[in-house]
Image 1 (spheres, rainbow, N blue to C red):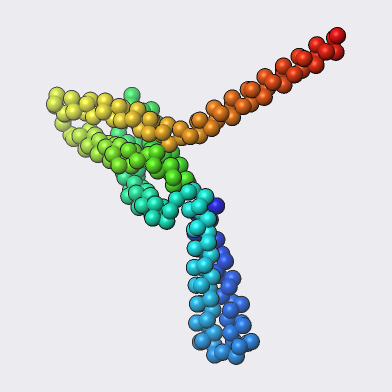
Image 2 (image 1 turned 45 degrees about the horizontal axis):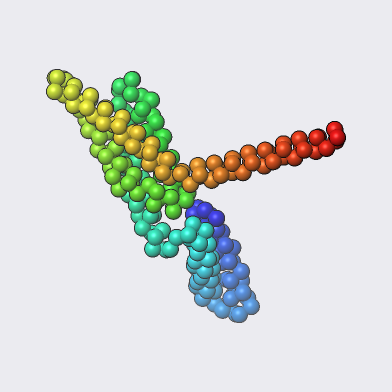
Length: 218
């Protein structure tokens, strides 16, 4: 179960509980209207809390995280979200055609790292450098570049700064690419293992077919 379902399912469970609790309180237990409403709200709240604890525990168990670890990761993801929006906004607003693909690639990789980490929080530990350092550097450099490029008059010193910033952003794109590969490293290893198994299975099957064919010819 993903985090979205773990948050939504308790609500879907709690809402239908309100009316039955009110009906039982008002008609079966002969409670007053107001008291029945209170009981129904408490009942719905209790159903929400219990189901929330259950599904949250399942989510944490699935991703092999403690509640403290998840809260720490969630905090870092919350802090990263506005930074990603800022760097994306800055890179899109840059009017430099030759660096367009590089900027587009950087945005795609940044968003991919974030989406993978949000979906599977434990991947955060493979992307710590990205969240602690590289994302901040990308944000600062992109916004600095936009600021400099928007100056009405550009002298030699300013043009040099713009060139250096573009070069640094290019280098940083390669660094973020490495961050992405770290995040998906286990997936690549698993895929390679499955490919090796599949190749071995195919090889064994072919060898078996050759042996069977040889026996028939004899």
